[in-house]
Length: 91
Image 1 (cartoon, rainbow, N blue to C red):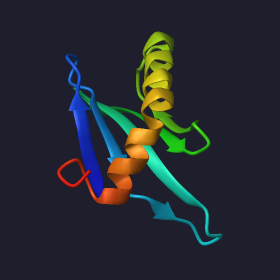
Image 2: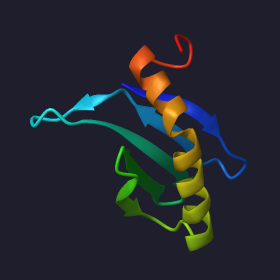
Image 3: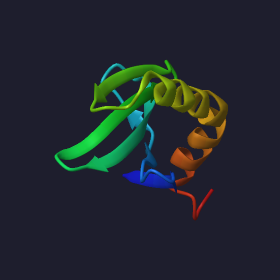
């Protein structure tokens, strides 16, 4: 399940997944930034706990990506809390 965290002025939405358990037992959370465009969406996806960008599809600028990296780094503990509790309403 995905949980909307916030919506920015440019219509970018910040959404996180529940905790996903991979076959090898590793637990991850996907942190997604997505903005509607004329032709679909700009999408940037980070994975926690690695903080790696696993998808960058669209036209986010380097400056925007740096801002989003900071959001992910500073919000990681909160994102884990939300993901483990099943959403903002529960956390």
